[in-house]
Structures are given as C-alpha cells and as structure tokens.
Length: 141
Image (cartoon, rainbow, N blue to C red; front, top):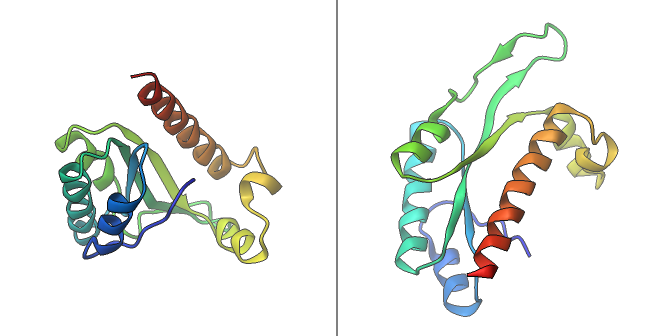
C-alpha cells in the first residue's frame, strides 16, 4: 500500500508509524529550498521511528512546453538530487510537470495506463521499479 502524506508537522507520519508496520518510506520533494526543508523534517522523523528510507524523488522537476518545446525549471531543478547526495540517500528520479498527469488524474485515467510509453510515464515506471527492488531487498533481510 502506498500512502501519500502531507508535508509539514509530521503528525500524520508519526501516527502512521505508531500504528502500522511500514516496509519503508520514500521522501518526495519539489526542488525549491522551502520544500527541501519540509522533506528533511519528514526524513528525520522517519529515521527516529526507524523506518527504512527507500530514497528520494524530485517532483515538479521541470516543465517541457508542448507548444514551444522549451524546458522551464519553474521551481528550480536538481535540489532533490543534491539533497539525496547530502543526506546519503538514493536518488530515485525526477518527475517533470506534465499536464497529462493532472488531467488524467482528474479523469481517473492515469498517464501510465493511457500512454505507457510517454516519457513521464516511463519516469514513474522507472522509479516504481527501483522502489519495488528496494522493498524486496528489505523483505529478505
């Protein structure tokens, strides 16, 4: 089961850790400094609760304009990868902003199902494979 938890005070994370045995956690952040601070707070709480940290993902890493084909780093770029290095975590990958992810989510038709060969769908699949391997490795310990 995957649970998407809000950033912030870590109250939801703490309650989950206290009531459910967790295989691990993935820290997801956007590249800007304020989001990275929140991600570090969540990371420290999971470490205190001895939950394995599977890695870090940078969400909203960049935007490729479908019209002009220029790349925009709206929220900066690379902060997640740099934080992973500094925190000695595996960087699991970067997910760009993609309008089809939002519209597909709103329609209940995820991009990974409707366009599995789309570059963003492939990014999700690559990250999911890494997480799957890490969870399987932990289960063998």
